[in-house]
Amino acid sequence: MDGNLNALTTVFTEFYYWVTVVFMFLIHVGFCMYEVGASRRRNHMHTLMKNVMVIPLVTVTFFFFGWWIYWAFPMFPFFGGLDTDAGAANLPWAETMGPNAADRITGVFWAAFLLFSWTAASIVSGAVIERIRSSALWVHAVLIGSVWWIIDAAWGWHYGGWMVQYLGYHDAYASGVIHAIAGGYALGVIMVLGPRIGKFAQDGTPRDIPPHNPWMLTIGIFLIYTGFWGFYAACNVPAISPEAIGGQITGTTWTATNIYLAPTSLSGITFNFLMSLSGGLMAAYVVSKGDAFWTFSGGLAGVITASAGNDLYHPIQAMIIAAIGVVIVYRLHYWVERRFKLDDAVGAVAVHGYAGFIGLVIAGFVLWGAPSSPYEGYATINPVGQFIGALIMFFGLGFLPAFVVAKMQAAAGVLRIPEEVELEGLDYAEHHAYEDAKEAIIEADKAYLASKVSPAE
Amino acid sequence: MSTIGYESWAVDLANVGAIYPFQGWEVAMTVIGVLFWIGWHRIQFVRENAHLENAKKRALDHERIQKSVERY
Image (cartoon, rainbow over all chains, first blue to last red; front, side, top):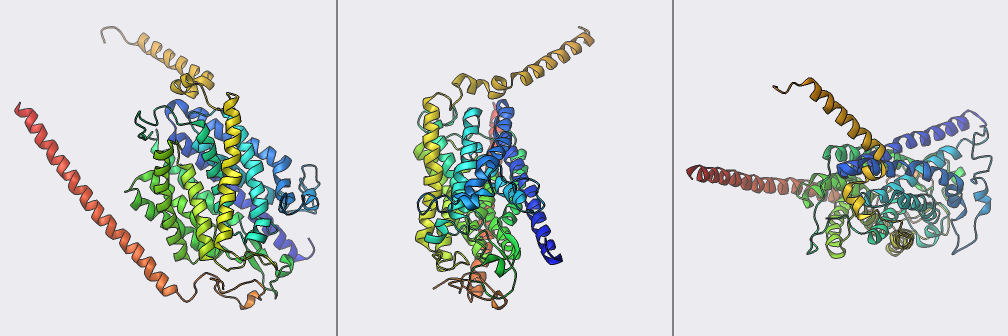
């Protein structure tokens, strides 16, 4: 760190990403609360443990190979080989992957991406509650969290990614690279997994399976909103000079940038985060006729729809785009549920997958012709590139691998829990020590109480 | 053509102001936004009125049913 200004910028950037990581932890807390609140009492512990263990499994695999994929795959395999030079500093045995006085960014930058990985895995986790085997879900968590999403990030969320260069793909706050892919992935799994017992009547009419604790869902989704602030900040480079970017920008004015190193501002994205949240909430309230959970989820879906272009949209555009996305998402969710008999327990496919897909396509129109990158020769943002990008995210890297792996797991008999266990509840089946202990202490208390009460009473 | 007014970032940022799409249409966008907001209130009033009317009718029906039961 040569010179005071350089030292200050370096330490500020290091601290900036560190803070975003702490904020983003709340997304996972929120997902856990939401899932447990949505599950029935007999499945609490299983639902919680299924999502908690996503944290260590995705973390270690992201350290071992996920982070390397991001740096090595921007052009691989369609438009070039692996970028082994960029990848070398991000291998688990590289000196920069640990405390290093000459490198103050790799760890916090790695962690910011890692928290996105948890989110991707956690989105899938919510859709499959109460009937998937934990072992099966944890394989999917590693695949979406440390392989598929980070490949899409290398292609479409990296300043040198081929989708950015050739398609003009623009996805500033991850409508596609996190949400569309994770929603598509969840769809692939639930298509093979099947619905929970009782979800559909004999004539195919879907039944609502209400959450056991609406207040846990409410707090959960508000925590997700809170973590989303960190997510947005983490998608930006907080302060960088044109010289450091090394692109076409002239002059000496420093700027915040999006992940593509193109100019934006923290102020602009703050406007847009809140306006798209509001547009989503308002539209969801109307379209769902005041249903509390759809309204809350609609706020999230609104932000997700606008996220692709929230680095550049005007706040009113962000609000309207969010509202449009939410109306489509809501209608599509129920149409798909009825038509294909799919049980998406928390609406993850809709809120993340459909909203992300739609958001990418809308950004292609609203930002048509805007530069996707500060570097020369890149395609500008356009509807065709965004639509192809959305297909790659949702179907190519999301739905397809999930469907194939889930089919393999189903064929091996390791995807779904036995019917008897589903009816009894996973907490007793998998966490019987806890349930046995509860039962024993209740019996002991009852016996003690009986000993204190005389028959006459 | 670019909706944000810049087709490339080959610019000095010292000379760049707004970078959102459709600059010059701010007033029109505000009108659309206000209509969305006012429309939302309108829908909410209409729906809540209808909802409360139905709830009132249900309550009255309930009372009538109770009386019928008590009448034996």
